Length: 335
Ligand code: UDP
Image 1 (tube, rainbow, N blue to C red):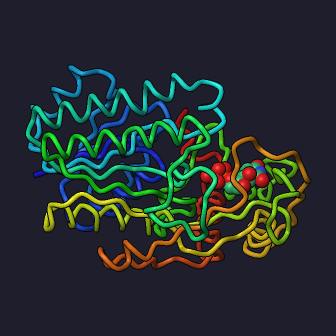
Image 2: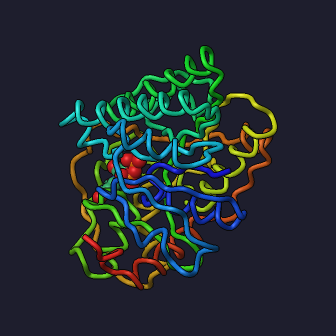
């Protein structure tokens, strides 16, 4: 039976597809390729090639066809819009794609009798944290529509479990970063808004400088502190989540981070060190909706699913990202 990965041609999705292929799973990808890249799942350096269905989760007939044509055991659901700023400007676009599309997916699963789902959620469900490190039991109070849409799905999953027995594992990611060690897949967002790829673009001379959004936060150097986690460590957590659904048939929620915070200035310094290139940084106003500090406690997933990050060190994470961007300065170059 196959694992259906929605958004499998995206950044975290493609790294998870690579991990599943490595584990000899049969993989089917559904992606509308609006943001995803065909080449992210077609490299001959991967352990095989998934079956790709190009289409949109908002198209119910398309979904029905995918579920009727394939023998699907479980779903790993990534497909969503992910930009916080855009979600504030255009919340309905986010509700439409992130919530309505997921309800269609759950309906298709229910009709096809598929009862396992791993869901891609986010630290943005917490909003401004009450405690650091953040625990899964802490209050969820998103400060932007992106986080709200993810939390809305988390709640729908709870009730879908209650009524239909569809079991879920929700993974709340902190800052996904880095690239696959093979060098064949990496981060390529358009537009790019994430710190590490933007700083690397500055190192490559593709942008003149990096803007530091806010220098007056209540943090040691005044800039925001985040918990950076390697994308392949995240991918491995999806495999473990899938295994737990197979063996324990129990729904759960887990944070995923490294439990260590780095300020924006510290990240820029690490990129300078790894690349050996000068990088101009300039102070800029705060970015609306940014909490000062987001650091995860991932003790629960370590304890319950035996998850252990293999690339927890920020220099290692940045080195893998640097390898990818140096060799793919224009990303997949397919748009
Ligand atoms: N950031 C920055 N300059 C940039 C992009 C991001 O100072 O050009 C900061 C941002 O304000 C946040 C941190 O870097 O504090 C990480 O931002 P990113 O967008 O990578 O991830 P997020 O924390 O929003 O998930």
